[in-house]
Length: 363
Image 1: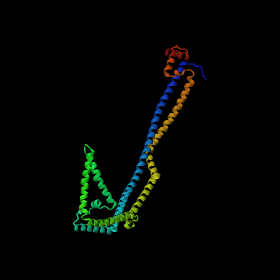
Image 2: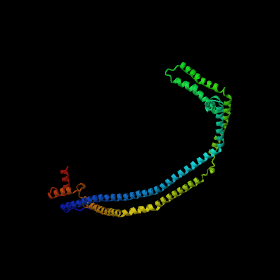
Image 3: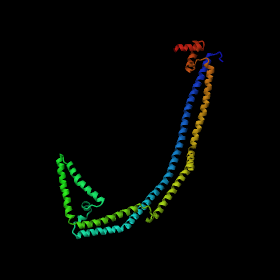
Image 4: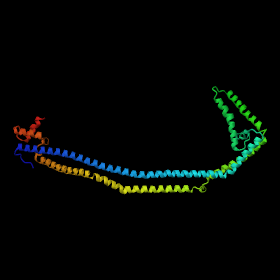
């Protein structure tokens, strides 16, 4: 409820003092709010630094533990690799020895047959090339492989060579191709006929005897290949005496399994126990500083709360005691001084006249 103002001068001076006090409280509130924000940022930064330190320390220690066991596992892995390599080498040597042993008879027989064939050809003065593989492929083929070789030779001599030669000629004409084919037939065909007539007719019996010997050699080589294939496919490794290698491999694998279990247990212990101890130790080292920062924040929060209550009370006091008489725009020290000057100089008889006069002057 508003009451008449007995003394305008005293009223305006009181209003000015209250508003000045209110402004001072606002400045204090702003400064204290800034201080509190700064203190809170320091507290949060320190708290984050502690958590980061804990996280980094925990990660580094866990990595050290894992790395230590991984090094041991890596060494064991290398030992296992070498042990398996030694086993494979021993197995390969055992297979070679077994093949050599089981095919020794056939290899020896082939050696004697080749020597026999050489002797027969030399005794009958047959040229050495007549007992070669390529001679029998070209002039006395019998096996599919020899016929395939003969066909390949004819393709090269009577297709690849003439046509390839024709393609190398800058100016190509069909006549050139015909001439080249005639030349190839004359050279290769003539050479084939001459060698054949010179050897097959003259040494026909010796070449046939060589054919029989080569057939036996070929038969023995097929048996050797079959025995070799069967031995390599044989899954039974007991005959190669690999037990000591298997024992070594099993021992290394057992050691690796135990190391892996120890690593798992160590990391589990670290995660459930050691990790918490590290975190507690680091937190304890920073507890005093964090507590001090926390107390500072708490003290400033209480001060700010009290100051805001005082600021609220002062605002309500001004509203109740001066807001009813003065327009809001005049609740400023410099404008109150202007109103007071008008009252003192008798320019205005009351507050309403003083405010109207001020508005006219500043319109």
